[in-house]
Image 1 (cartoon, rainbow, N blue to C red):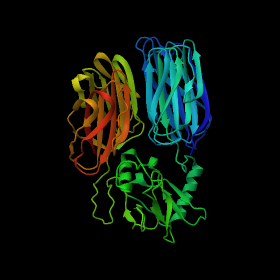
Image 2 (cartoon, helix red, strand yellow; image 1 turned 45 degrees about the vertical axis):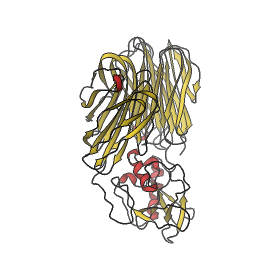
Image 3 (cartoon, one colour; image 1 turned 30 degrees about the horizontal axis):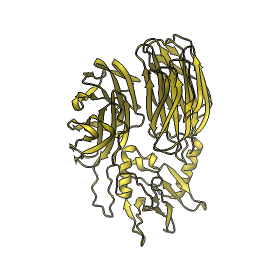
Image 4 (cartoon, rainbow, N blue to C red; image 1 turned 120 degrees about the vertical axis):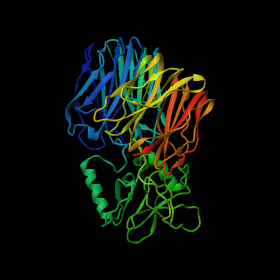
Length: 564
């Protein structure tokens, strides 16, 4: 389903406000995979920031922000609300904004409504800041073609130029500052660079990328009922698999209406399980680079005739309807291969024609969508936006700062490790965590003993049973970072690989079998990245090497999380 632009609006407060609650006329009703993005920016003589934002009384599904400057400062915030978190009907609703201090200049609020947006896929974000006049731009990862990119910007003066790789939705100056927002409906893999030209001073930019909804997906009730109808026509018996994560969400019927089949899009499989899917499909945990050797097939429900459904292994995984088993077919030429039955679960990634394969008990921890990241200018206190989470999830904050500094964890958090240096003490990094309660703040802060810049990534994990083991802190000065091997004590673990370096050393390579949580770089302070995989069996997790953009001082670490 293609993402569609629906409407946009702008609201501006008076000067000197610590809260602002404009009334927004919502143009899109429930359904059609809608999403509303809200961008906020303002100037302050101190360092005021957003404390809370609600739309229709609900907090956002995710947000990202950046603060530029330590005296006079500019603040930029971007948040998003998916369909189930929005008012059901069109009409007036309130956007309620509170700041931690009164803003010297007007609070500028930009709103865009979209439809056709994936409601559960990972949202990618990145930020950029500059304290002098010039252009702002940021490069954001794109996980699927025809994704939606959104950029919200702020300028400390009234001057601004034109959008870069964006369609302007709103732009304008109020009193002595300016701001705007734009979008791109056709962002393609692997990334997109977006921005705005000729900002006067204290330029800030927040970029975000949202995947398109699956072709047969819609959050509307009409689509749901038609999907149910197709499902019921495909088989008279019910079926299930061990892990609901792999159950096809959509059903299709062929042109004659005689047979139907289920499919699953890789985008619908949790990132933590995609390596399992590729391993089962091709024997390798990485995404296939060629589709020529693989074809996915299914048995027609009555004739049992092999029919080619699609040769694009990224898109379809098909179901044999009567036996309720999954099949892999590998085409190397010659006679047709024998189908290999395989019942997928998140605890087993091997395929075998016999029942002797071993599967571990339980499911591995799951990294949730809605991670946050941010860079902060030199200071003693650094704020971190809290990621999307549910009560009982574990929230992790990975932060790094320039030089050998003492970092103090946010209030209420526990220490996984703290104040660990890279080679030659170039950077210091820490990992903190806490179990989310019924109500968590939208952001927290950590502190330093001396003023420095900082970078952070925050994410949440479901089914988290606590940290099993943490490796030694490998260090070096090169263009390749090593994250050490450790041995997990239990099966079905989540294995994190954490990298911190001096300067902005991005991009960092995503290694075979891994998935991104996120990455961020901020020159000249530090860069950090976190990637992960799941491991079905206990024992050695292996050492991996992560390439960085140039030779610089680095540190690398492996953290293993147990299932609950």
